[in-house]
Figure 1: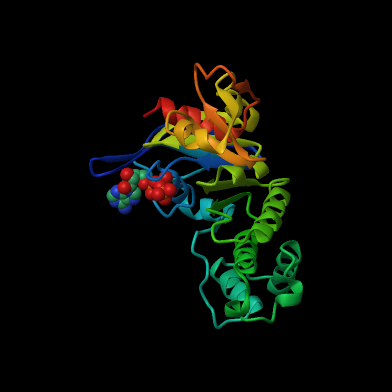
Figure 2: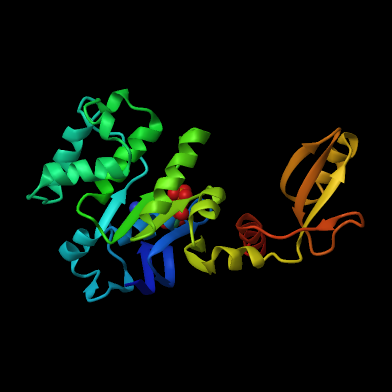
Length: 285
Ligand SMILES: Nc1ncnc2c1ncn2[C@@H]1O[C@H](COP(=O)(O)OP(=O)(O)OP(=O)(O)O)[C@@H](O)[C@H]1O
């Protein structure tokens, strides 16, 4: 079953935080990408029923977003700052949140199941305050998937995680996306590139592109180049190019950049989601 958004808008007074968003999101990992103020948080808060939309229609099968209680039963949510309950043990926090979710039967069993899914069984008696950032995010996922929701919404999934934790956490997200709709919102293009099947790019409340990751990357096809330069030339050229990234190669640098007409020695390269995203942002300035 798919999550369908049709012409969804949200106004805060005169601010149009979302304008006419129409999207269909199938089972799998779906990324929301956009700069600050694009409307990602507003959209996630509407999907989790923390905010109401101003206009439009959202549905999942027979359930529509005017049926708030039913929608809440569909959704698991991991907000950005999930680090509450520092003095409580992992299993106590999950039991507490399971009660709040209205899960009455077999709570112990359900908690054991989600702890196994996020690989935290052996830490269940630890206090939240004793866990690493990555483990706290995993407790966050555990509470989000309690009750087996069809739609899981995660804000900035890997913010504040170290590189190893980030890789482990991405693997967990991919596993969740095998059976559920998992929507993540992030500034980190690599999180989406490495975990998502599809993504939507928002800017200033508008949906500017959506589709499969490789389709979004292909939007910059023919416009992405690399150029190798000496250290002396590096500082000269980076100001004149729309640099995507650069790294050291031998004594000089390799620069990856966007251009319609590149310098003579540049080499055309295949495109990534980040290229497509930066190309779209450059166009919508
Ligand atoms: N409660 C509110 N009242 C007024 N304006 C708001 C409110 N919440 C969000 N906005 C405005 O709506 C727009 C979209 O904000 P939103 O937080 O959804 O963007 P975002 O893409 O999540 O950005 P960030 O990545 O910085 O969190 C912004 O212009 C923001 O200032």
